[in-house]
Length: 400
Image 1: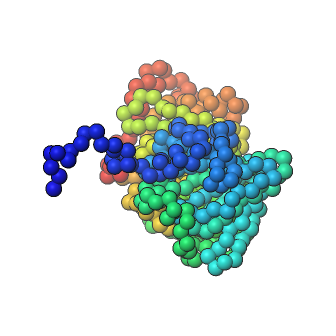
Image 2: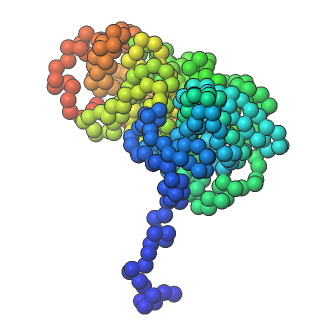
Image 3: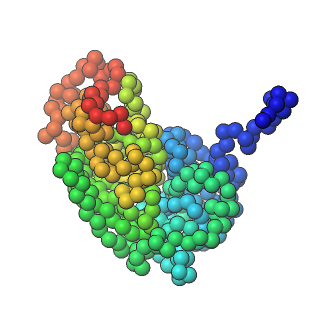
């Protein structure tokens, strides 16, 4: 039992109180750490990264939550990374450049696959891998969304995470999963909930041209597919917004890293009770994360369909936490008024559609949503309808 004589108010609490092993590790890597609501990953400053023997930076966001983070890996022209392995899951999205990756599997064999811009691939857990730049002229830049915060904060032992010899043969996938092949798993989620389609693979050649499936529950004309990458606990999905339309607003847990893939537009974010929207313009290279339970809505403002990639904790197969289980069950596409997390078009604040009409008019794009809204009436709204607390439908369901 401590005595009064042993109480020392001058004791150094650096490693004794409120310790964040993940942030301590990140700060010790010697590369830039960028923190913002979102980032242009193509423009972030990188630095020499000894761990990869390449260049990199951390692209941290205010909404990354407790489990997820992102870093940028830049491989110089004609260069390659050091072979590396780790106990955190990692999804790579190719921002720029061409190259290849070699992955050493649990059975001692290796797989090598080539990639270009807008490809996505996952490293099976704790497999050693090496990234090669296929160009002798230009650097290659990749975004890596990962669950290193969860892993490092759980074990708080860097050697255990980066020098562990345990293998996970069940995570390797089929022999053709690094060839861009995969297995389609349709899921009927029951009456009143939109079905979803899962694509199980380790590698997608080109997200811009990958086949998607109807998901009108998130907005008329919307397309979507969810990925099971390397049998991971992390989730990824790609959605498409048609020309002349936008998605319905919804909310979910923190940590969803949204990457713009094709097209241009913006996203609005707000909390219940806010009077102003936070706006994030996007195009390929932009990544951001909506904070916990913050409403957000994606708008296409260009003359072509727009796609994005979202990576988060809790896959459709392994939801991990209760909030992600609710998402997998379809809560993200059910109205708030029916106990879900979505705002239906006719329940949204009139400023939402008015702002979008002005944005697409400036780009010479016509609205395809006249079948839902009286757009002349919305254009004629006076200032009194376009100010004040952002309108939200009343929730009749649980808080989460």
